[in-house]
Picture (cartoon, rainbow, N blue to C red):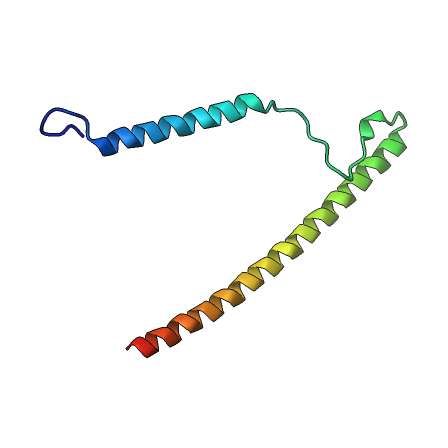
Length: 103
């Protein structure tokens, strides 16, 4: 916004500066980390196998490993969600008790 004196409002200038810094950070991050393939600990390199049955077995082992990792991460996430829900319930009860004492 332009103020009465014809100057740009300080809030608008701050917003523009923050936005330009954010864009510069994203661009710098993109340039600093090339999109190279990542090694995943536990996976085998199946491209080196020359026999089709061995390559198929290798790929199947990788699929089974990734499925187990997904299942483990799912279990951990569910446990964290349950713990957070329990904590929220306790905090709600505490807030209700405090509100009752204030009123």
